[in-house]
Length: 476
Image (tube, rainbow, N blue to C red):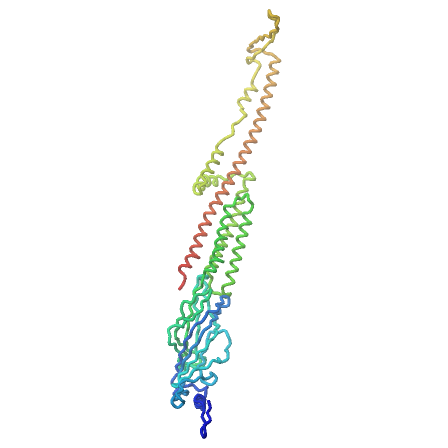
């Protein structure tokens, strides 16, 4: 403000103060009383939002408010000389500022912020500026999607070592009062740790601040859209051993389920770093389920082969029959089926052909007793014709007609017995074929049930060990 009073020219107090301070001020000179005294710079931070954690490229994007304080001995004045003015605001281009840099930033150095610094009469300088930080964040995705990540924001002076600039924080952790929640990540804590490191260029150590941003992944989305469907698909894969071989769909079902798990493997691969040094638990689980399903597909082919062995009439080997009837039937709760098949195996078809009877027929001679019947007709007193029979029993007699008739009868019975014997052999063969086929079918059913028990147990153990166990006892 300027004022026009006769003989007096008034100038604004703030303008006079700034002109006075800037008259001999050089922003390139470190504001210290002597060369050996470091400038004490305090830095604190308010985390506003975690915008993104790119797992694929291991990058963290954060919106923060950065607050820095230091003392500039060249920016001091007595307020009473300037109308009681105890604070002024100067652009950062006009005052010295510490070159505090995000060491692990992936963005190029940006231009100086246009936000002004607040300078107090005692030389204290306060500079608060919003910043969008994009930093590298090596991830440990072993426990994905139940993982906890710690991303460091490392701030240090780019050119001043510890003998010239001492960086520290007034708080033990960053401020998250106004933090906006992220949908995927839960912010747990942001402790601040001051450390020192030695660079090859300088004798004195550099001081830097590490803001450890600790994030916990919200796993609900992945459980609902990745874990649960994968469990259902793997459970459906166990149904391959329940599906009857006669359906003809056992192998195709195995291949379909195996392809489905491969698709979920690609989804997981899309969420983990390309150059990851560790393998995620979910990937290990999917790999184990793929091995189980691939094994089930191979064993399904074996079961189908066993199922169709009986079609060729091949008999079940004795050791397999013993294994099936004595052990597997009891272990797999197939006792009823085994007992029925055992009864069918023991039962024999009655024989129609008796060699003794055939020999007796062939050895019959005319000397054997035979009956000869003679018919006579007479008339009774009523005039009615009556037929009477006269039977003659002969022993050791020879009669050419009787011998001929007996020989014909013998040949007839012999042919009949031979025909019955042929039919009997066919029935026996058919029955043996059916029993043989039934034994192979029962063995295939037993193997299917045994594999169902083995694979179901393996699935439950792998799921509880790999997924549930690591979800409950994940690394801190």
